[in-house]
Image (cartoon, chains in turn yellow, green):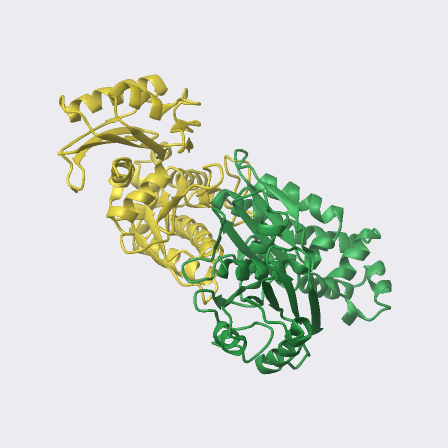
Length: 314
Length: 314
């Protein structure tokens, strides 16, 4: 059998898995949190032990890698990580090829997850799709004409920093009203904390036992489901921002399908309803598209890494 | 010599030209305004006489067509024209092929102009570009990986209806703060008229001899160049709206180049300066791009039509 090794260097977690080429069930799977004070070399060390644990002395035929940050996919060199320091210009593909003696392919997590959903997930019957992950940040990956579209310099897909409300709140990037500033989990939590300091939001307050530091995007979603008005407003603003972004993208590129993954997409029916309504209203009436949840969940990057590796074996 | 016939069905004008394949100078060129109460059949009649005048009994080897409205580029069937009635579902490619007995290729004007600038104009040294026309409306055409990108159903490129200011003025499409609503010539003129009814804008008023109906986007540009504050504000808002749109597109697709054509791009240095500044500020720092004026001017669609026809002869 031809063994494939798939690696996922996320911002907060690391995962490795092995699968037989063509198969759709993991032969081995191991994951670990990336420690708070991690850097590139500690991440690599942890990954080496995960690889050892899943390979168990077997040798893979190829390695596919999803990396949580911008990557030069042609050379497989990491540009940087926004979460873990020391990754600047690390030639990850080359490192892995030398260490394991087999070909490797590296791309950023949104592109790789898009490829995973396209080959094995929610996008299987579509040739043109945009995958959007909505969790700590908001990022996207393109499949155009059945192939990943990475842009002229590998930077395509940054829907998170599309401005949809120039009078909105300020994003870490310095602009106002980016999709990420409105839609991501941590920003929803930040806005909730700020509002709660002015009173109200009893349900949110109870869910965290009064400790506002414990508020997360998930807590906001839960409070919204329990009928908390403030939480519902925040969640609707999140969905509205992303919905405008999706409608704008539909007008601009006219893909058939949007696949949405990441923790915030588990926020419930109301969130999805606002997304659908806002995107439909923002796109021109003659521009058609569907919006569906990701099918592979948190494993989308790993399955995309499998696809990258399978392409190396063609 | 192999003769190519290029046709441009614009919203307000019609043009036909002939050129030898591979040559870059027109052998014949004729144009006509489309009458105010025109429809598809009067437009076709006028075009037939333009074709007769430029062909002078010669027979072309292929016909390329730029059409001012959405087109199914695969079949060459017009979907509709937003300016001239009666164009719904007209099989233009088929009509021309039957009438002239040679292969024809039809696409919408923004896509065709993008192809013209890519093959023969400002985009010659770039494989990935977005062409934007800013005049009566705002539209765009993609070249990705050296080929036109039309979207899953031929609707890609609609930057004009990207929302960049959800609290902005209402567009004909029903949304607030579309790029077209902020940046196009007629909307700038409409906003100027509205402001002038409240007083001010002396320079604009003088330029049209007090008849506000005569205000156009060009008049606003002229008044701005003469130092009129209201005109400068309107022009800067136009440039700001388009600049946000361009920055958003850069983040999303990461092309190397934006080529800007159409009457509003002649608005002067100040307009260009705001475009550059706003687009740069909207795009992420690590996303690179250039913004340049179209090189082929009003002939971009005709030269793009030549490229369509040359591709038929490959």
